Amino acid sequence: MNPKLISYSFGLCSLLWSAAAFGQTASAPAAGYPGPQYSVQGSGPASPQGGPVSYASVSQLNGLLAQVEATSKTTQSDLIKLRIERWKTDGSTKKQSQNDVESIQRNLQDALPAMIEQLRNAPEDMPATFKLYRNLDALYDVLSGVVESAGAFGPKDDFQALSNDLNGFEGTRKQLADRVNNLATSKEQEIVRLRADLKTAQAAIPVAPPKKTVVDDNEPAKKPVVKKKPAAKKPAAMPPGTTPPATTPAQTPAGQAKPQ
Image 1: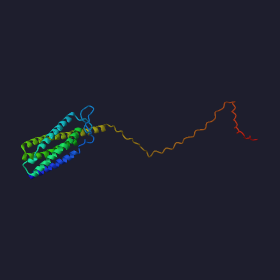
Image 2: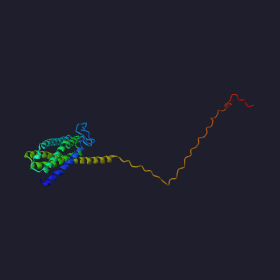
Image 3: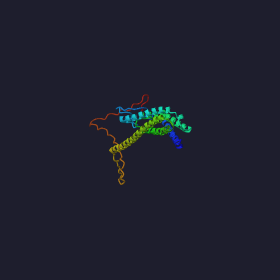
Image 4: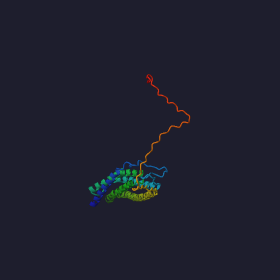
């Protein structure tokens, strides 16, 4: 076995292990996406920004995910049929290939389904979309090493079956890469439009001019206003010939002698 091929396979295995570990953190739905959300108009699941996702986008994604799941199923079946112990090569190469196969199987059984489910819950979530793309990229790299070894040391039927699986992952990976690019372009256009709308709205708001207060230092100070006390009311004038009423003497308290 070529030492470069062994080193290459080991590096790909490490990459797949990293992708699998990264994907396991997504076993639960992403925060903020407890499940598919549908708009009142029934236009499809909600996007991360809260707006409905178009049926065309959801339909495209469902087709891609269906391809991934179908390829994953056939790949797992083909890997189980491998008899690496019968390959015409040294024990070190067989062991490395077996480790690569086990890594692929763990990814297809655990990490990949979790990523697919997360993306179904948020069809246009860029991080979830790119996470799946990166995992498919790692799967393709490691599986290509197994296919190469199967072609060099194993039966022709095993090589042909795994080659078909590899082509399936490659086709889906390219389509997913195009989707990532389209989503990124769409989000950028949306940001530009929102910024333009914000500027238009800000320009439409009338701005009242600030009030100015002019202070004249040369103006003499005003004297304080002194309020006049109201004049006492004079008794009403009596008509001529009228005798003023007699003043009633103050009553003497009972039991007290009048002065002599």
